[in-house]
Image (cartoon, rainbow, N blue to C red; front, side):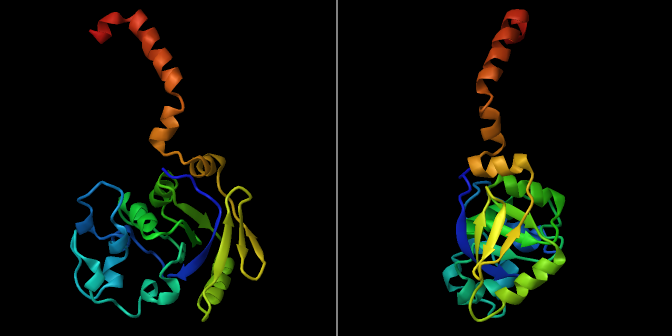
Amino acid sequence: MEAFKNFTGVVAPLDRANVDTDAIIPKQFLKSIKRTGFGPYLFDEWRYLDHGEPDMDCSGRPRNPEFVLNDPRFAQAQILLARENFGCGSSREHAPWALTDFGFRVILAPSFADIFFNNSFKNGLLPIVLDAKTIDALFAKAGGETPLSISVDLSAQTLTLDDGSVIDFDVDAGSKRRLIEGLDDIGLTLQEVETIRAYEERRRQEAPWLFI
Protein backbone atom coordinates (compact mmCIF):
# COMPACT_ATOMS: atom_id res chain seq x y z
CA MET A 1 0.00 0.00 0.00
CA GLU A 2 1.33 3.44 -0.91
CA ALA A 3 2.16 5.66 2.05
CA PHE A 4 -0.10 8.65 2.61
CA LYS A 5 1.64 11.98 1.96
CA ASN A 6 0.39 15.46 2.79
CA PHE A 7 -1.12 17.21 -0.21
CA THR A 8 -3.37 20.02 -1.42
CA GLY A 9 -6.36 18.95 -3.49
CA VAL A 10 -9.63 20.10 -4.99
CA VAL A 11 -12.86 19.16 -3.19
CA ALA A 12 -15.72 17.50 -5.12
CA PRO A 13 -19.06 18.13 -3.35
CA LEU A 14 -21.29 15.03 -3.54
CA ASP A 15 -24.39 16.38 -1.81
CA ARG A 16 -26.03 13.04 -1.02
CA ALA A 17 -26.63 11.12 2.19
CA ASN A 18 -26.55 7.32 2.60
CA VAL A 19 -24.32 6.72 -0.42
CA ASP A 20 -24.06 2.94 -0.45
CA THR A 21 -21.27 0.77 -1.79
CA ASP A 22 -23.37 -0.43 -4.74
CA ALA A 23 -23.64 3.20 -5.85
CA ILE A 24 -19.90 3.65 -5.35
CA ILE A 25 -19.06 0.58 -7.47
CA PRO A 26 -22.02 -1.45 -8.83
CA LYS A 27 -22.13 -5.20 -8.35
CA GLN A 28 -21.29 -6.17 -11.96
CA PHE A 29 -17.76 -4.81 -11.48
CA LEU A 30 -16.90 -7.05 -8.53
CA LYS A 31 -15.53 -9.91 -10.62
CA SER A 32 -11.95 -8.68 -10.41
CA ILE A 33 -9.82 -8.56 -7.26
CA LYS A 34 -6.85 -6.71 -8.80
CA ARG A 35 -7.54 -3.54 -6.75
CA THR A 36 -6.93 -1.39 -9.82
CA GLY A 37 -8.93 -0.48 -12.90
CA PHE A 38 -12.12 0.45 -11.04
CA GLY A 39 -11.76 4.23 -11.29
CA PRO A 40 -13.59 4.61 -14.63
CA TYR A 41 -16.60 2.82 -13.11
CA LEU A 42 -16.77 4.81 -9.86
CA PHE A 43 -20.40 5.93 -9.31
CA ASP A 44 -21.12 4.28 -12.67
CA GLU A 45 -24.90 4.56 -12.57
CA TRP A 46 -24.70 8.25 -11.67
CA ARG A 47 -21.84 9.27 -13.98
CA TYR A 48 -23.13 7.66 -17.16
CA LEU A 49 -26.46 7.55 -18.99
CA ASP A 50 -26.04 3.96 -20.20
CA HIS A 51 -25.52 0.67 -18.37
CA GLY A 52 -21.92 -0.14 -17.54
CA GLU A 53 -20.27 -3.54 -17.75
CA PRO A 54 -16.73 -4.70 -16.89
CA ASP A 55 -14.01 -3.91 -19.44
CA MET A 56 -16.13 -1.31 -21.22
CA ASP A 57 -14.27 1.60 -22.77
CA CYS A 58 -15.74 4.52 -20.85
CA SER A 59 -14.19 7.24 -23.02
CA GLY A 60 -17.15 7.34 -25.40
CA ARG A 61 -19.98 6.60 -23.01
CA PRO A 62 -22.73 9.24 -22.64
CA ARG A 63 -22.23 11.15 -19.39
CA ASN A 64 -24.76 12.60 -17.02
CA PRO A 65 -24.13 16.38 -17.17
CA GLU A 66 -25.80 16.81 -13.77
CA PHE A 67 -23.34 14.59 -11.89
CA VAL A 68 -20.62 16.38 -9.96
CA LEU A 69 -17.65 14.34 -11.23
CA ASN A 70 -18.58 15.22 -14.82
CA ASP A 71 -18.10 18.90 -14.03
CA PRO A 72 -14.66 19.95 -15.38
CA ARG A 73 -14.03 21.85 -12.14
CA PHE A 74 -13.90 18.56 -10.23
CA ALA A 75 -12.34 16.24 -12.81
CA GLN A 76 -9.07 16.04 -10.87
CA ALA A 77 -10.56 16.21 -7.36
CA GLN A 78 -8.70 14.31 -4.65
CA ILE A 79 -11.07 15.10 -1.77
CA LEU A 80 -14.68 13.94 -1.73
CA LEU A 81 -17.21 15.84 0.40
CA ALA A 82 -20.34 13.89 1.28
CA ARG A 83 -23.24 13.68 3.70
CA GLU A 84 -23.95 11.26 6.53
CA ASN A 85 -23.62 7.47 6.47
CA PHE A 86 -21.26 7.35 3.52
CA GLY A 87 -20.29 3.83 2.43
CA CYS A 88 -23.32 2.02 3.82
CA GLY A 89 -24.55 -1.24 2.27
CA SER A 90 -22.40 -4.27 1.53
CA SER A 91 -18.86 -4.64 2.82
CA ARG A 92 -17.12 -4.81 -0.58
CA GLU A 93 -13.51 -3.61 -0.54
CA HIS A 94 -14.01 -2.65 -4.17
CA ALA A 95 -15.59 0.60 -2.91
CA PRO A 96 -12.36 2.11 -1.51
CA TRP A 97 -10.46 0.57 -4.44
CA ALA A 98 -12.66 2.47 -6.90
CA LEU A 99 -12.36 5.72 -4.98
CA THR A 100 -8.57 5.56 -4.75
CA ASP A 101 -8.22 4.40 -8.36
CA PHE A 102 -10.19 7.46 -9.47
CA GLY A 103 -7.78 9.63 -7.50
CA PHE A 104 -9.53 10.34 -4.20
CA ARG A 105 -7.33 10.28 -1.12
CA VAL A 106 -9.65 11.82 1.48
CA ILE A 107 -13.39 11.68 2.16
CA LEU A 108 -15.09 14.22 4.43
CA ALA A 109 -18.48 13.35 5.90
CA PRO A 110 -20.46 13.63 9.15
CA SER A 111 -20.48 9.83 9.50
CA PHE A 112 -19.44 6.64 7.73
CA ALA A 113 -20.63 3.05 7.72
CA ASP A 114 -18.31 1.13 10.05
CA ILE A 115 -17.03 -1.51 7.62
CA PHE A 116 -16.36 1.00 4.86
CA PHE A 117 -14.63 3.28 7.37
CA ASN A 118 -12.24 0.52 8.47
CA ASN A 119 -11.67 -0.78 4.94
CA SER A 120 -10.64 2.70 3.83
CA PHE A 121 -7.66 2.84 6.18
CA LYS A 122 -6.54 -0.57 4.95
CA ASN A 123 -6.54 0.67 1.36
CA GLY A 124 -4.82 4.04 1.62
CA LEU A 125 -7.94 6.18 1.87
CA LEU A 126 -8.42 8.68 4.72
CA PRO A 127 -12.05 9.06 5.90
CA ILE A 128 -12.47 12.13 8.12
CA VAL A 129 -15.51 12.66 10.33
CA LEU A 130 -16.51 16.31 10.75
CA ASP A 131 -19.58 17.72 12.49
CA ALA A 132 -22.61 18.55 10.37
CA LYS A 133 -22.16 22.32 10.78
CA THR A 134 -18.62 22.15 9.42
CA ILE A 135 -19.74 19.92 6.55
CA ASP A 136 -22.50 22.41 5.68
CA ALA A 137 -19.95 25.25 5.62
CA LEU A 138 -17.66 23.24 3.33
CA PHE A 139 -20.51 22.51 0.93
CA ALA A 140 -21.25 26.23 0.76
CA LYS A 141 -17.62 26.95 -0.14
CA ALA A 142 -17.19 23.99 -2.52
CA GLY A 143 -20.24 24.85 -4.59
CA GLY A 144 -18.91 28.18 -5.86
CA GLU A 145 -17.53 28.99 -9.30
CA THR A 146 -13.98 28.54 -8.03
CA PRO A 147 -13.34 25.05 -6.66
CA LEU A 148 -12.43 24.76 -2.99
CA SER A 149 -8.91 23.52 -2.30
CA ILE A 150 -7.83 22.01 1.01
CA SER A 151 -4.35 21.14 2.27
CA VAL A 152 -4.38 17.89 4.23
CA ASP A 153 -1.75 17.32 6.92
CA LEU A 154 -2.27 13.88 8.42
CA SER A 155 0.64 14.16 10.84
CA ALA A 156 -0.78 17.35 12.35
CA GLN A 157 -4.37 16.20 11.79
CA THR A 158 -5.37 19.48 10.16
CA LEU A 159 -7.23 20.65 7.08
CA THR A 160 -6.20 24.09 5.84
CA LEU A 161 -8.67 25.78 3.50
CA ASP A 162 -7.58 28.09 0.71
CA ASP A 163 -8.72 31.09 2.77
CA GLY A 164 -6.23 30.12 5.48
CA SER A 165 -8.74 28.76 7.99
CA VAL A 166 -7.80 25.52 9.74
CA ILE A 167 -9.99 22.58 10.75
CA ASP A 168 -8.69 19.97 13.19
CA PHE A 169 -9.77 16.36 12.79
CA ASP A 170 -9.47 13.18 14.84
CA VAL A 171 -7.99 9.88 13.73
CA ASP A 172 -6.99 6.98 15.95
CA ALA A 173 -3.26 6.31 16.32
CA GLY A 174 -3.34 2.86 14.74
CA SER A 175 -5.14 3.96 11.60
CA LYS A 176 -2.93 7.03 11.31
CA ARG A 177 0.17 4.84 11.47
CA ARG A 178 -1.23 2.52 8.79
CA LEU A 179 -1.61 5.40 6.35
CA ILE A 180 1.61 7.25 7.10
CA GLU A 181 3.71 4.07 6.85
CA GLY A 182 1.67 2.56 4.00
CA LEU A 183 0.78 -0.60 5.92
CA ASP A 184 -2.10 -2.86 4.99
CA ASP A 185 -2.86 -6.01 7.02
CA ILE A 186 -0.08 -7.95 5.29
CA GLY A 187 2.38 -5.12 5.84
CA LEU A 188 1.56 -5.00 9.54
CA THR A 189 2.06 -8.76 9.83
CA LEU A 190 5.39 -8.65 8.01
CA GLN A 191 6.72 -6.20 10.57
CA GLU A 192 6.64 -9.12 13.01
CA VAL A 193 8.27 -11.59 10.65
CA GLU A 194 11.23 -12.31 12.95
CA THR A 195 8.90 -12.99 15.88
CA ILE A 196 6.85 -15.32 13.69
CA ARG A 197 9.95 -17.20 12.54
CA ALA A 198 11.18 -17.56 16.11
CA TYR A 199 7.81 -18.97 17.16
CA GLU A 200 7.76 -21.44 14.28
CA GLU A 201 11.27 -22.63 15.11
CA ARG A 202 10.36 -23.07 18.77
CA ARG A 203 7.25 -25.04 17.84
CA ARG A 204 9.34 -27.17 15.48
CA GLN A 205 11.56 -28.11 18.45
CA GLU A 206 8.67 -28.62 20.86
CA ALA A 207 6.40 -30.59 18.53
CA PRO A 208 8.38 -31.87 15.51
CA TRP A 209 5.58 -34.26 14.52
CA LEU A 210 3.48 -31.25 13.43
CA PHE A 211 5.99 -30.48 10.68
CA ILE A 212 6.31 -33.95 9.16
